[in-house]
Image 1: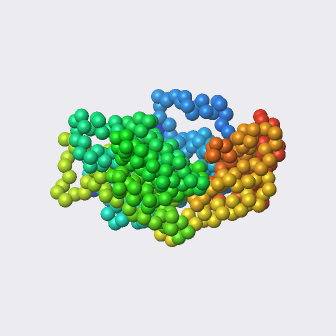
Image 2: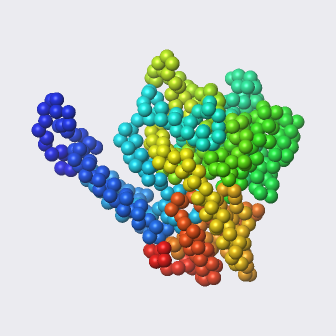
Image 3: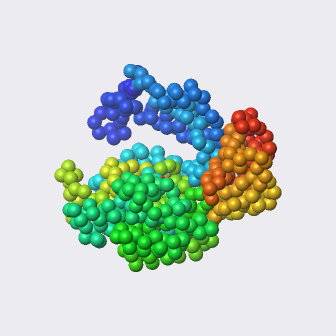
Length: 513
Ligand SMILES: *Cc1c(COP(=O)(O)O)cnc(C)c1O
């Protein structure tokens, strides 16, 4: 009965009349409305309560098995059971990244404007790959807003992606096509010969998605050149120049260098201008991976490091990191967007030609054809809710908290600050690891803090050692959460054996919050 509708009396011409016949999954508009209201009430309550609950809760094996091996009943369920299922089985078990005391990875909580926009865009359900629709134009517009914040030129175009990994993949594919086209490789044996000699450079601190993207476009591992970094974890331009010269000498084809703006481990920003200069000299594409730190030009304290960003060939940014746009929203920005079309425009008879003067479809600038409009609307809504000043102050808020965290670590004799910055992260170690292996101790301490449920941090391997790492990317985090984190770490250091989970599982945070 649940799919049926209250029998409406409606004649032709009554504009608001519900349809007479609903085939599942359709429902009567009143049913839809009631369920949406219930869901909206639950969402606002849930988000308000997140800080009071555990950061992370372990799942039982039975629960995990239930989710991994569901069975589909012959009869459909009531619509409201979706909400029950999320409330009971899903929502209590996030990674923890909505919680203000989550410091582990660059995973943000959702911005309210983005959350609402996701639902609204789903209702419109436009596909941003083909035809003409308002959301596809809005995607073009949001790409321009990001480009403007990032300090890229007015000509910039691009696409929204599922995240930074996909943006890096699009960038390398674009760089490859651009380079081989420039090089006149054509499509015959010359292409095969040149493709086999393509060589890629990136800092040894680059995100693993760069090497993954290289593998996806068919570069073998022996054509990848991780370049040494300086003592601040920044790509060393002199080492890059030496590596490129050596490869040119042996007849290889250096086609692209990737810089990182905000390295994942320690938040470093690679030098931009010297890399662009070398790329111009040697005919390489300069891609900057700014998944975390791509919008630094919008922040006065960071802007000097972004001098010359307008001269790069492509930029990855990840609005689902710094801007809290709901996952997944990344972007690839390309100052000369014709290069994207050269790489990705393919024609097909079942996709009719554009009208004269129409802009190229966004599917001609990426891998996807049917593409969600949720990314564009949630990015647009989040940016507009913040305003330009709001973007600057949000990132500045993270920088300030990171400064405070690093100060607290420095002031605490039992901890030692090792690295971190300018992007908001701290890598640190326990000063006196006792007689055991310090790497194992750091792993154990992070695990105990996680199991305690009051805070959450991770480890990272830097300089050959596993150390503690905490980053700031939650707009709800306050300096009280920093104090809490330090307390939890010190507590986890003092107590427990290898198998001890630390505190009994905390379901509530201390009341002083
Ligand atoms: C997070 C990150 C990525 C990957 O982005 P996803 O959105 O997780 O795919 C790539 N590069 C850097 C520097 C990152 O911080």
